[in-house]
Image 1: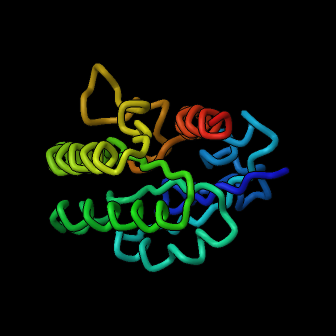
Image 2: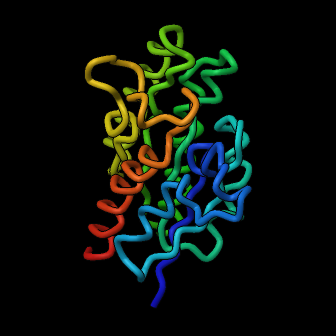
Length: 193
């Protein structure tokens, strides 16, 4: 039996810059590809759209959740990129977590990646939003996927390692592989439960 995991978010979920898909590639610039390698029983359905804020992501929840047993919710960097306060973004993501739980879905919430091209201006808002998302995950009792820490360069806090970013905004293929490992760990634990 196949377990469908809906993946709802922005370009980090969609897979960006997606160069491999343009050339008929095999999805290596998507974390869903890498997470899917861990268990053949899991099908990751991509509902990511480049450039979307959390309110726009929320508007697509029903479509993404239809037929899914689990959902990964990711977003927030575009709110920051557009200069919006992070508190409403956190509340929008909290509302999505609650909607998913009401539907009986297994839920994981992803935090926001470091942003090389936005550093240092975006550093404080990213850290603030991630702190709020950690609180959402704690209160709502859902796992927080550590996307930020998975790709942060310990020698350059607030930025991804150069080899883990394709353009300073998005992960490279290796970065997506690392994010996929984060998701696969949660997925395997959820299926055992």
